[in-house]
Length: 252
View 1 (cartoon, rainbow, N blue to C red):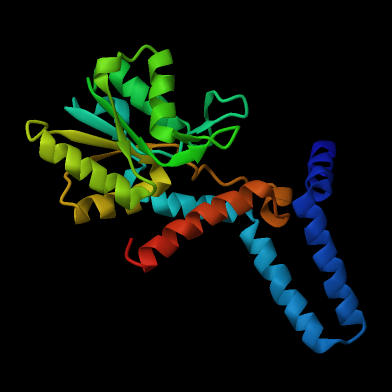
View 2 (cartoon, rainbow, N blue to C red):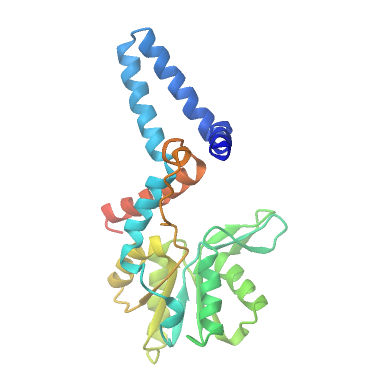
């Protein structure tokens, strides 16, 4: 019981929780003063904020996006002539070094596929990112830097350009036109991003096998502080999910 109270108070003391409490207070004040128009507006805003920051709801959205790939075990697939790892999992730290970010499991899975013999060729793609002194560095370069440190030989790595998933697929199409001898091909990206990546791959006429990484649709925690109080993880997962749904709506 004490632990539950402590966790609830901790969540309420965080910026998302304080904003939520503020909205509740303003809504109650509008109700008390019988300011009907303001009450309706604040109630709608409170409901949207509560749902948008609900981590458990966002997990359900992620699980829906990941549903077609939840049973795939990448290290049991292959072997592949090449595996393409989409960018977004590696960035540049303030000291200029390459570092794994929230989707760093993409890069890690690529290295694991190589070291377990599922492929002998890794291709990293990704957009240009700003370094600590505003110099441009390519996230594909950052990914291969980490792979090199993880003992993937230089001659078994490739870099592809692309500022978004559509451009990355076009770059893969161009590379495969240069290597028609590559037959079986794998695609590594976050499981929640795979539906969009596979749609865009199909538009490019690419026959890629999905290799999911970075699952975010974990089991729902029925703890009251997580079911009710908005938090940063909920906003992050919800935004990622909404971005994928928006891409689907506009045909991407």
